Amino acid sequence: MHLRLISWFFIILNFMEYIGSQNASRGRRQRRTHPNVSQGCQGGCATCSDYNGCLSCKPRLFFVLERIGMKQIGVCLSSCPSGYYGTRYPDINKCTKCKADCDTCFNKNFCTKCKSGFYLHLGKCLDNCPEGLEAKNHTMECVNIVHCEVSEWNPWSPCTKKGKTCGFKRGTEIRVREIIQHPSAKGNLCPPTNETRKCTVQRKKCQKGERGKKGRERKRKKVNKGESKEAIPDSKDLESSKETPEQRENKQQQKKRKVQDKQQKSSVDLFRELKSP
Image 1: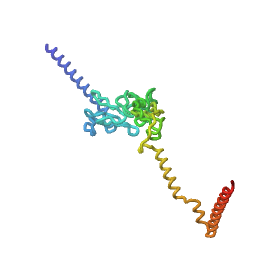
Image 2 (image 1 turned 135 degrees about the horizontal axis):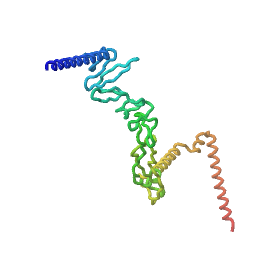
Image 3 (image 1 turned 120 degrees about the vertical axis):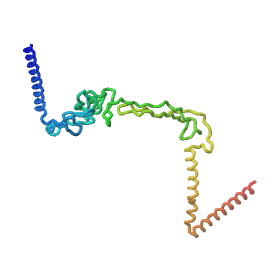
Image 4 (image 1 turned 180 degrees about the vertical axis):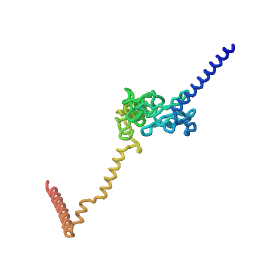
């Protein structure tokens, strides 16, 4: 009985020594793996190294590797920088770099902004937009092509001719419509927004205030013509103003002779008529 108890005592003692040796070796391995690990880190780090920066982050912060020269330094941030997307795991929150053609992304399969030279479409960065879409250059996105849209035609205007509605039988009438949606770069162009057609009406006289443009021009020409006649003196008056007193006297004598000749001729003719049976 005593021998059995002594044997059990040595078995338990050996087991406890084995457990102690295992714990000691595990501690030595950890010290060899992280010789410079510090628990008093700053900048959001939970654990850190003098050479590698942050090794783990405080809760809710994201761990990201920043390249400085030839080495990478661990950093803990409240959100991932541009060009990275964040993923939360049970033991760590990690920032992962977006694809090479993607400037910003939601995850590895969904880009929100492409790099220069690529166009964004449904979370993908493409060299060219698919058929039926066009590139919107200031946002570098593929968008739907927009075609022109116009309203219905307005009613035809009254029949007119040269700006008036009277004094004619055949004229023209016009109708218009408005542009509701202007087209995009590849969209269909807008159709004409006005139409003109010939029209026939019953002729009616214009009232004084309805003479129109042509009537007003005709009246203006008449007034100007009358003023020009009044302003230009008679050619005969101009000639008479240039004559000398001697020339005017000779002309008067010639006129008197002509009158005397006419009187003499008429008296001779009268005498002959009386003398004849």
